[in-house]
Image 1 (cartoon, rainbow over the protein chains, first blue to last red):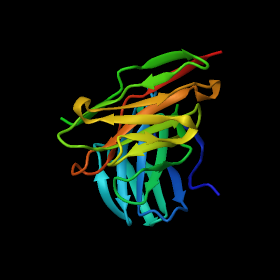
Image 2: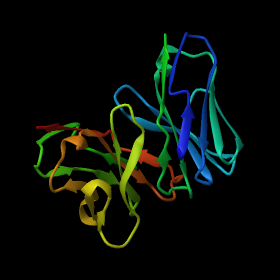
Image 3: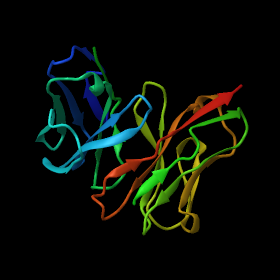
Image 4: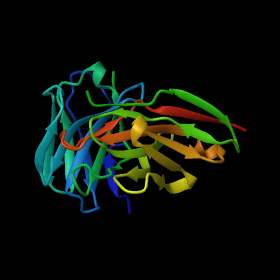
Length: 112
Length: 114
């Protein structure tokens, strides 16, 4: 059983399109996160949800909108995709806010 | 300002040699400390963590790390590296009281020579 699963694993799309990445965790964790890893492997937090409530919203363009329908899911919707959005996006979850995080396999987004 | 630094971008070691990856942080208190490994095309896997207590922590895959408060460091070590250890290693920190978000260092890419 995969603990944190993301779909799709790869996403290639054209500029201006809208796309979503889905994330599900079966660990029973209360907190979920989205991280962005750029081409230099730098990992930066984008959002954090605790029990479906937004806790952290870093300086991210408002084209990015997270949605948490329930505690086990945190989806990321991106509007009007730009070339600079190309990156690997990781979903993660943790039992408590600040505890160790478990990561999904990542979604490699390529905007052409 | 709160920060976490991995001074070495790339490290190359021979198989069987010992390894030490450096991690330093800047913070007024003791944060929660983690080491993660990322193999090519994979997600991040937790190697070990430090919250409090014994400053030498053991992790998976034969790794250990030592927290040194006086040096604000949490260096990762392995006595004998295997070729399969080649990967990207990230030190990560939770600065308690600062939103509790996991902040990553810039990573160290480890290459293992056979």
